Amino acid sequence: MRDVAGDPAALERLRVQRSRLADRMRPPWWYMSGFAVVWALIFACPFSARFLPQGVRIWPVLVAALAVICLLQWGLARATGIAVATRSLRDRSGRPAAIATIGLSIAALAAEALLIDRSLLVAAIAVAALAVVAELIGLRTRLRAIRRTLRTGGGTA
View 1 (cartoon, helix red, strand yellow):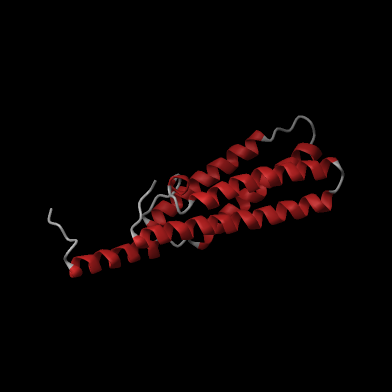
View 2 (spheres, rainbow, N blue to C red; view 1 turned 135 degrees about the vertical axis):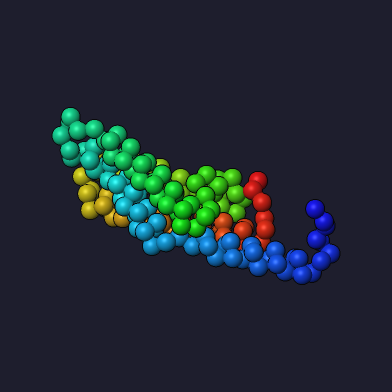
C-alpha cells in the first residue's frame, strides 16, 4: 500500500468519499418516528405502574421497546450501510450527547414518579412529553456528531 499523504488527488478522493459516507448517515423519517414511540412507551411506564391493575407487569412493555430499538437500529444499518448501535458511547464527538440523554432519562423518570405520587398528573404528562422531545433532540445531536466525525475522518476513542 502506497503512502498517499503527499498526493493531493488521493487526499481529495478520500475527502469526497468521507463526505458521501457522512451524507448517507441521515436518518430516515421512520427512524425518528420509531424512537419517538419508543421513548413515549418508556416514559409512560411510571403512569402504567401507578394506574394499571396490580397484576399487570411493566417488563413486557420494556422488552417490546427494546425489540423495537433493535429493529430500528437494524433498519438504519440496512438503509444507510452504517451500524451505529453502540458507536455513540465510544465516539468522542457523540459521547457528551449520549451521556446527557441517559441522565435526562433517569431524571425524567424520577420526576414523573414524584409528580404522580403527589397527584400532579398534568405536570407529569408535561415532563414525559418534554423528555420525549429532549431525547429526540439528543438522538439527532448524536447522529450529527457521528456524521461530523465521518466527514472529518476522526476515529473512535
